[in-house]
Image (cartoon, rainbow, N blue to C red; front, side, top):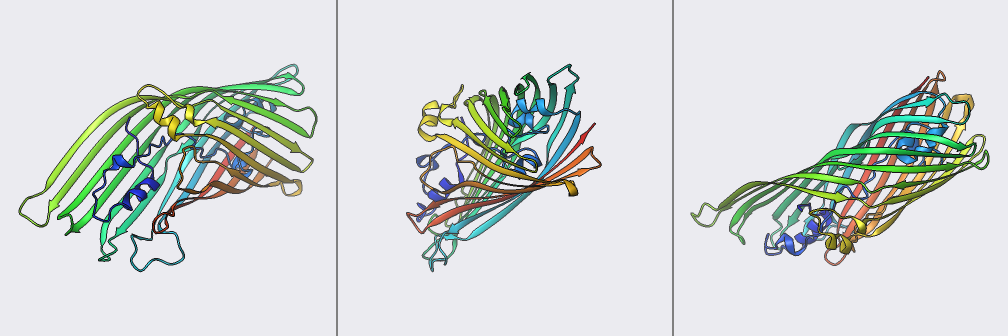
Length: 430
């Protein structure tokens, strides 16, 4: 299958370019499946609490976090949401000062996107006792938005030897049909059936200015367009032994994707030392493969007092168990690992102001093995909710994260990401 090369490996490749663009990519390839372990976050209330929702979801986002929590919803609910993400990527020297003869110039690139994130409806069914609730919705689960720019400097001349950039956009939506019911006054169960679809659009561009060592000026462009579609199901339970404590758990069954890929390649070199015009190559290729994500398991606990709620979740996934038709499963087992993702959150209600404030923290580890990871993905979150006329709620959340790849072996080259996400959700309850 054709996949992209992760960005920190491109930096590693550049380190071996002291004689120009002479190193074949295949010597350093490290495959990354961009949909693996890529969790964007859903719902402003949830993301204000650091995503800790398995035992405390109380709105339509229960379709995503724990369908059993739908049983707690007693009123018809219509909800929708938007997100804004600002991503900044810095590449270059990781020290305080740039070396006098740098291999890389310090470069940064910013990518901003505002997107639709969710639309859901929850329909409680009148029952003699207990609860029976159905829900339908679509939620943006994964975002592929990412950007990269790096400039390689010839240490002997101080001139640019290579300019590389990558722009990636797209994401995957999950369409869900779910339901929940009470088995007893303190035990609820729920399930969702999910259809996934989306696209990942990647453009890689490399430019080598006129270079006396090579004798050429070179342009190269690679374009990957992957279309995802797949199915899976989720089961959840919720136990509330008393009015303070809630305990939940979920089983996310394997997602089986079909991925259609279109790849185009363009290469053009201009000879600057002889009448030879150089070389041009251009072609496109189509492919299809199947990919199965592994089981994922989650557990959560929440303590709810009169005005304060504390919640914590933990998830487990073994990404080395990915597989599928047309996939090199040996390569996956060698390069992927099991990860634990954990979330902490708190919510404080101020009834006199019809306002709720939230805060949280969570860690979302990179699922592939790499010695170049300096700091893993960590998120700090804040949020607020407002009750308007007893039927309308407005929730807002802000998430900030930072992670970094670094090669300390040569010139302390780094690739640092920081992201700021804003979530806005609006819900109307009858």
